[in-house]
Image 1 (cartoon, rainbow, N blue to C red):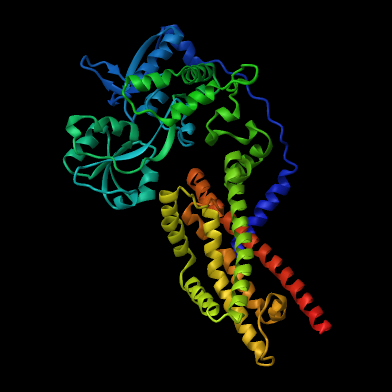
Image 2 (image 1 turned 180 degrees about the vertical axis):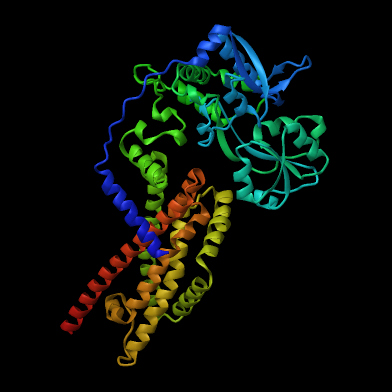
Amino acid sequence: MFCETLGFGVRVAWLFVGLLCFGLSGVSAQEPEDSKTLELIRKRGAIHIGVKTDFPPFGQLNSLGQAEGFEVDLAADIARRLNVKLVATSITTENRFQKLEQGDVDVLIATVGDTLERRQIATAIEPNYYGGGVSVFLRPEIHVTEWQAMRGQKICATQGAYFNRPMSQRYLLDLVMYRSIRDALLALKDGRCVGFLYSSAAVQAYLKKPEWAGYTTPLPIAMFAPWAINVSRKEHNSELDHLIGDIVADWHRTGFLIEMEKKWGIQPTKFLKDANTLWSQQDDKKNLLCQRDAALNWPTACRNPTFVRSAEVGGLLRMGLWIQENTGMNLTFVYDPYDRSVFLRGLGYSFALMAGSIALSLMLGALAAVMVETRIRWLGPLVRALAVYGRMTPPLLQMYLLFFGIGALLWTGFGISVSPLAVAIWCMSYYTAASIMTTLLDSAEHIRVKNPDFRLQWSNLTQVVELTAGAVKSALVNVVKQSVMASAIGIPELITATTSIMSDQGNVNVMMNVFLFVFVLLITLWMRVLDWIEKRLHAHARRQHANL
């Protein structure tokens, strides 16, 4: 594993050296191309937009057999802005891209999750207009609280959903595929599967209907993905592409999408709230921050970061994206400001934990040994008893007892908040100090074989350095390694930061190798520091012997 990590580090180092010669200037963007689809729309005076009619409240049929819903209203607004008639065409999850490719519809507004794979077969309009995750609609007799409990269970699903494969692989679900939502729901009612895997937004709508009384969605939403309006892949960077993109941007700025969300009784989403804030931001001169540049491109900060390419940006971001595009290594902790701050903060906390634990362990261990060596009869046994408790109680258990036990009592009783960093440093130091005390006392016993009057004191601690250096240094290296335990009480140290980035970006292999590489470097650094301290103490001890 160390060799693999070393190789990973060398590979990253060479990439950075090579990138010193990599040009950081952007390339000029192409001008918008003429849109054949837009020309056809204007010629016929109507726009054909594919919408779902089996996905309430986003798309459904009313009592007159007409399409209505959240997305149908969006389609109507696009038609109004283009000053043409709307022809709402009913499509399904299975055939929507086929309809678009064949020209049966000009535009898709059909709960399409925006993914890299789908951008290979169609043009996704930016910005995204909505976002949703994946949930499972469970039968009344099923009682689970986590996705792992669904392993091996038969789950109904619809063909063509982007989340089918990753959800099946991640949680080992046994998916039973159906061509339509209607068929999947019928199968769920008939008991042919224990749940229905579908968009969280649609599932919430089903829960409100009387016929689904008793059914639940107890599991957390998974795989959040933004939704995009789609046009033909031939329309990329065309006038139609840009025109609809401007309309979506205006929806976000004016709060139109939030109004539609309220109209159709959809639970308010953080995605729309954040998008409204982002697209409404202005600079000091009251200019909108999210405006197209001279090349008609949106600013990077206003785009979905998943789809930004190195040629479109500059600086560290371009370098990081270039590495990802050419090597597959997603180094967001280098080029992404948020991930970088999370990682550096975790590194800082880990360093503080290590430094604090080393210093306090040495101080407590030496103090305890000196106290045992005093001639106060009751003090020695008391200190030894406390040391036995420290050695016999694992640091993690001590953290739980002190932080969640005593800490909770202090907060509820006196309003005193206990610092998790202080708790972690104290518990790890207490455990390690007990071992250091024992080592120092054993060394004092060894010296008393030749010098019966020897008593360990602050003034003669350096005399036991040669006998204790190896064992003390080993204990201190162990306390450095134990610093990862601090994540158990909410300290955002290195392993917590790494896990957070992995969960957001999915770059598990890269981040685990980075964590291992950095953690080994930290341990090596502290070993060098301890070696330096040991040499200084040895030199001091030799000078003392020379003066005797």
